[in-house]
Length: 597
Image 1 (tube, rainbow, N blue to C red):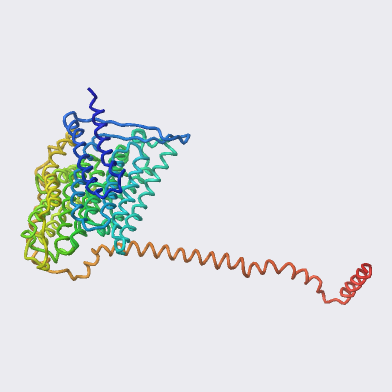
Image 2: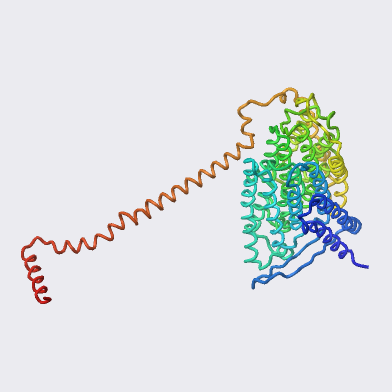
C-alpha cells in the first residue's frame, strides 16, 4: 500500500501533466475543447490529495533534481507540495475550468480562438509552476511566465492603442518589481549559496533581502504606487480579466510573501511595511472604485482593494489568513467578471453602468450571480468572503498594531459595501436605460454551468476551506461583542446608508472638479508625466553636456588650439625682429645649399 505522501505527489503531478498534455498538439482545430476538458480532468484528479489532507491533517511532499553546479551553489529543480499547494490547485483548476468553458461562448467568433486558449493554458501552467516551486529558481520561472503571458493576453486586441498601451504598462510595472526579486535572488546566491526554500527560511532574516521580496510582491499584486496597471488591464477580453484577477497573476505576489513568511515574521520592519502598504492600498483602491462608471474597472479596483487586505494579513503575521482570502476571493471575483462579460456582450458592448439598469428581468441568472458575488465581496455572513475577510479584520482588531492602518482597513470595508451596492443598483435595479433593441440571452449551457459552479463555490468554499486551513491555528474567542461584530456592523451601516442616498447622489454623472482626482488617468498622468519628463530632461542635459561641453569642445576649438599652438610657437621663435639673426639664417642656408650642390 503506497504511503499518503506518494499518493499526494503522484496525483498532483498527474493533474499538472494533464494540463500540459494539450500543448503537445496545439495545431488541432478543437484545441479549445481539449484544453477545457484537460483542466476539468485536472480538477477531478486534484480532489484526492485535498480529501486526504482533510482527513489526515498536515503533510508535505517534495522532489529534488539536480540541474547544474555553479561551484559555490547547485541549482536544482525542486517541487514542493504542502497545505498551500494542495488547497490552491483544486481552486485554481475549478475557476479556470469555468473561465475556459465561458470563453468558448465568449470568444466563439474570434478567428484566433485556438491561440487564445493556448495562452490561457500556459498562463495557468506558469501559475501552477510558481505555486509548486520548492526553490526560488523554479518560482522565478513561474513568476516570469505569468508576467509574459499577462502581457500577451492583455494586449490580445493589440490593434487598439489602449490595449497595446495597457499591456506595455503591465509589463513595465511588473519589471520594476522583478528588480527586487532579482536583487533578493542574487543576494541569496552570493551570501547563502542556496536558493532552496527550506534552507533560506532557516537562515536569519536580512532587511535588504526582505525589501526585495516586498517590492516584487507589491508590483505583482498591484499595491499602492504600482496599482495603475491593474485597472488598465481591463482592456483585455473579459475571460482574461477573470483569470488574471482570480487565481493567477495578481495573487502571485501575495503567495511569494506567504512562502517567505518565516523570514518576514522575524523582522518587525518588514511586517510594518506590509501592514501599512496593505492598509493604504485597500483604502486607496476602494475610494477609486466608488467613482468609477466602467463595470469592469469597478471590479478591478475591488480586486486591488482585496489584495491590500491580503497584504494587511501578511503584516499581521497571519499568512494562513492571507492564503484563505486568496482561495475564497478567487471564486466570487471570477464570477463577477464572467457576469460583467455576459452583461457587456448582451447590451452591445456597453460598459458604462449608467447606461444599464433593469437587467434582473432580462438576465435573471446573471444578475443573481452578480448580486451573490457582490455580497460575498462585502462580507455578508456565511458567504465565502465573510469567513476570510471577517477573520482578517477580527485579527486586526485584536492585535497591537498601527491604529491608522486599522482605521484605513475599516473605512475600506465600508467603501466596499458602498461600491458593491452601487454596482448592483445600477446594473440590476431601477428602469432600463439601454437601447431596447437588444438580444439579451443567457440560455446557453456554456454560460450557465460556469456561473452555477462559481456561485456554488462562492456559497460553500468559505466554510470548507476554513475547516481545512484554519484547523491548526488557534482562534481568538475572548473578544468583546462590539469587536467581534465590528466588520459586520460597519458593512451593514454602509450598505443601508448607501441605499438611502442612491437616488440623491447617483442620479447622474458627477460634475464636481474634485472628482477628477479619482479618475484613474489622474494618477497615471502624475506618475508617468513626472517620470518621463525627468528622464527626458536628464537625457537632454546629459547629451547637451556630452556633445557641447566635451565632444564638440574637444574635437573643435580645444583640438585646434592644442594642435596648432606648438608649430606657431616654433615659428614665433624665429621671428625676433633682429637683422643679425635673419642674416645668420640666410648665410647658413646658402652654405647648406652650396655643399649640397
